[in-house]
Image 1 (tube, rainbow over the protein chains, first blue to last red):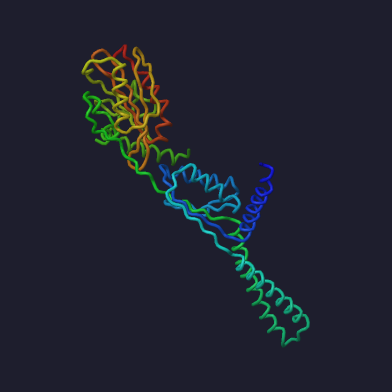
Image 2 (tube, rainbow over the protein chains, first blue to last red; image 1 turned 120 degrees about the vertical axis):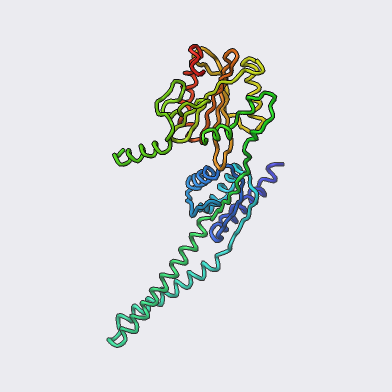
Length: 201
Length: 156
């Protein structure tokens, strides 16, 4: 019975792995989690520590949230870590298909590089009057190539590293109720507030 | 520490503890600064951990076993979170201590109460501070409590 179904299961698993690896190569993923915390600083340190252990880093940090970057293949592990250790209130997931943009950028880059190669050839055979014009065009193309390379690099980084935003919602913490009505009067005089107040006088 | 920093630290201490008697007293934690002539007896560390000892009437008269339960119930029912409790031995008496944690403002505090029954009296020791500071001074606090001398009735 098990053997009969095994090939289908394997194919199914293979499809998942294939689709995930394909997606990981072409999709910029991001997630936003809102969690309840009692100690914001400790939570921040723990989540950053986990991101770093997965090969990631923290991108930005303020009192309300921390933005983490982890290799896209490790994003699920980080999200599971956060959801396991703290009470999640809200979770959003974003996946942006960037293959078209990537292909477009690569095509543009290739075209510009080919154009630059042509300018380089022209420059070698240009006379004195033409050199200035060709050089100016070549310089302009170099600038455009650098911009395209930068955009390509940034987009590739967004694909390689998932962005996980962890928002903190501090748990409401109640101060102990020291106005207890114990039948033993001296016990009613105890308490953190009363003790600290005594030192303020 | 550089001389300028030493001077700054000294000046800060003088400003913080104006009105305190810096001479250490028996029963007060090491490196705490004692207040002069207060009842209860009070001392404070440079990082604002406070320590207080008072003697009150044992009313209604009860033994340590009774007050252990009553004290623990009083603290836990009012919202303190138990960190540790147990017996503690001073000179000439065995008492009970309970350590708790509780939020105070935006930070967490540790709050300790120790009780000793001394015939018609109860000696109550309280200490508190921000968790990190309290933990640094915790051993000093326990040494001070263990150093309370009931044989000589020094806390009276």
